[in-house]
Image (cartoon, rainbow, N blue to C red; front, side, top):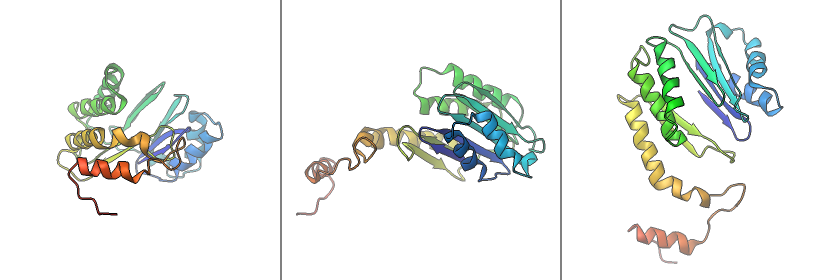
Length: 209
């Protein structure tokens, strides 16, 4: 389960998930605690820590991860500056290694596509030993909400479906992000004449005013 907070960082909780770990780690990092002690502090309070997997990155690119000793094999993680890769119940160790390698080498891609390329590499290496079912992609920048928030559940081909959704986001959502209400413009675009002109250009009906 992903947890993101603008200006603070990102946390993912996995395995037998404790949903409270994500907010606890983000709260600690928001107070200036580095990811390693933030993760250690949250895990220390969880009696089920041996079943948990969690990894975190803060706004400075520092990363930390925990894989409990009772997570289902194969389970493990790799972290570096600005990135973290973790998984449990994987086919074998190379899933995480190949995911990491793809992310580090596909630097010509924009971040969302680079993350998808990494997921593709992990899947090609064997992926989850239970098979394929779901995938998600979230990206947060300066706003209090995610710029990208895509999710695929219970799908026979989750990664191709996630890529299709990202392509739709690129086509329909990304060009309008700057017009949405946000920190720089709390009201965003609200000129009804402009909005209706766009609707007409798309062939959509507009109710007379």
